[in-house]
Structures are given as structure tokens and as C-alpha cells.
Length: 417
Image 1 (cartoon, rainbow, N blue to C red):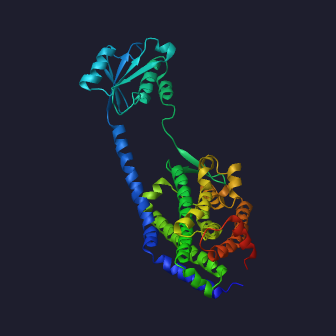
Image 2: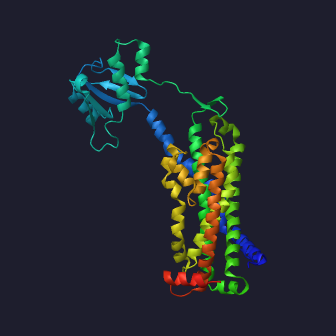
Image 3: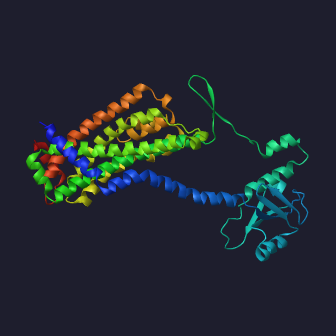
């Protein structure tokens, strides 16, 4: 019989001691800031790469097929690329090696119209490949080949079939809504970040569980705890206390994320990045059940370690299974409602992440019975995991010294009260 007064005492001790740790405060308050700073740093090389891409680049071209209509010394610009015509390959080679006036040069072979062959040349030791300007060269060749053979409007569309893009979404009621070009990216980033946030907190809370138990066992503190509370009471208290610390992390992270969303609405709104409130609402329920499921298994197996390192190694197996949805992420991105996605929704290890991901992408396409069924499977699995983990936890706390064999663990678990 569990004495809930003992459970509350253990839970409050674990919660209060955890939230006062410097590492916990740094992770809880600093993770969103770190993510923003990391994203800003990642944009720096992308910015300079964009600037470099827009800078004028000069390439040489030797038109042996006479399809470009450029005399030697003439140039033609295509976007940010400039193609300078040379009379022969020797002149282009001299320009590349001696004057360094071009980045590379292309040779349009005499039988180009029959073979389509183009030869690319770059200097030895160059950091860029010889085909750097191939897209612009393709556009130049298409334009010159079409020439006056095709009506100018048709020629323009053949060179650039899609010149302007507009995106619309058809709502469930049939209403057509305009959508910004960056909204699709936002719909992908949000669920991926949501899943990452969910499982980061779960795994960190599980790590706190293992570390606290292993430290108490190593320092013989657990013997004092067992004199005043049962193993089931200790385990339940630890799950509740450290689960509360993990849930507090999720609340703080979500609060900071949504605060940025509304605090900078003028900046974010033009991109039409929408938040799935269904996913936000169900996330705490999934966190609690997923934490109880994975945390109890991690705590039960981790209790057999003789020290913190051994306990963490034993609990890593469950942490590996928790990342199962990430392995199927390309399939979920391609079709969030495929057969694979439906199967992952009903596997307890992958159900929380898969459900949050699918509800973030397209909440209207998930039926209520599927959500209820997934949560029911997760709850039943959690109940079974807690029952099994409680027996393992009792055995792990009582057995000290050499690590017991699997047969000994099973025997002790059967006779455990």
C-alpha cells in the first residue's frame, strides 16, 4: 500500500532540489536563447554565401559550334554571371591562368547541336568546381538557340517556365486562402522543433532520474530512504518530482517561444507562420504520459548500475528507442498520414512525437478516435511499464556489490513484495 504522504515528501524534495540546480536553470532559461543565437550564427555564412552568389562572376566561353552568336571579346550577362567570348581555347586558357580574369571557361564543341556536349575547365587548385555557372550557361544557350525561331513570349516561357509563384491553401470549408512563400517552411520547422523540445525535456528528466538514484545508491543514502519509505513510494515520488521539473521546463520553453511569437508579431506575421493550437494543447498530456512511460523504464533498469556512469549506460537503451520517430522523419515529412505514420502513432515509444508532428502539420486530417486510441495505447503501456519498473527498482535498490545476472534479477523480481 503506497503512503501518499511519503510520495509527496519525496516528490517535493526531488522537485525543489532539481529546480535549484545551476545546470537546470541554465538549460531551462538558456536553451531558447542558445537556440536563437545558434540560428543567428547559422545565418551568417548563409548571408555571405548569398552575397557571394549575387556578386558578378565572369566566365569564359569558346563557341566552336557557333550557336551563341558572340564575337571574340564580346560578353553576355545572365543574372549575376557574365560570359566572355574567346576566339579559341588557347586564349581562354591564357586568361584563366595568367590574367586570372575569369573563374573558369566552357567549350561548346562543334557537334553541340547533335551531341549536346559542353566541356568545362577550371584552374588547378581552385576551390570551386568548373561547373559553377552551369545554370546561367544553360539559360544563355536556350535563349540563343531559340533566337528568332520562336515568338518572344513563348521563348521567354521556354527559358523560364515559372517566373512568378503564388501559393494558396484550400481550407476544409472550401475557402481559398493566400499563403506566403515561407509558410510551408514554418509548418515544417515548428513541428520538428516541437518534437525536439518534447523529447529533450523527457530525456533530460529521465537523466535526472537516473543520476539522482545512482548517486543516492552510491552514497548509501538510499538505505536511509528505505528505512522510512518503501521502494514503490520512492520511485513514485521521484517520477512525480522530476516529472514536474521536466514539465516546468516545457512550460517555460513554450512560454518563451510564444512570447517571442507575439512580442514580434510585426516581424513574424508577414511570413504567415501559424501555430497548431491542437498540438500545443495536447503536448502536456503527451509529455506526462511519455515521461512516465520512458522515465519508469529508465529508472527501473538504471537502478542496477553501481555508479552514475553504469546507470546512464543502462538507461541509454530506452533513450535510443525514444528517438525512433527521428529515423522516420523523411517519411513523415513526405506524407504525415501514410501507413508508416499511422503505425508509429500506435507504438508507445514513437506515439508522442509522431502525434505532435502530425497534428502540427495537418491537425484536421487526424480523427478523434485515432488521437484517443494513441493516447489509450500510451496510457496502457505506461501502466505496464510502471508495474514492471517498480519491481526492477526494488531489486536494483536492494542488490548491491557485483552486478546481478539476468536470472538473479528475474528471481528477485518474482519474490519482491
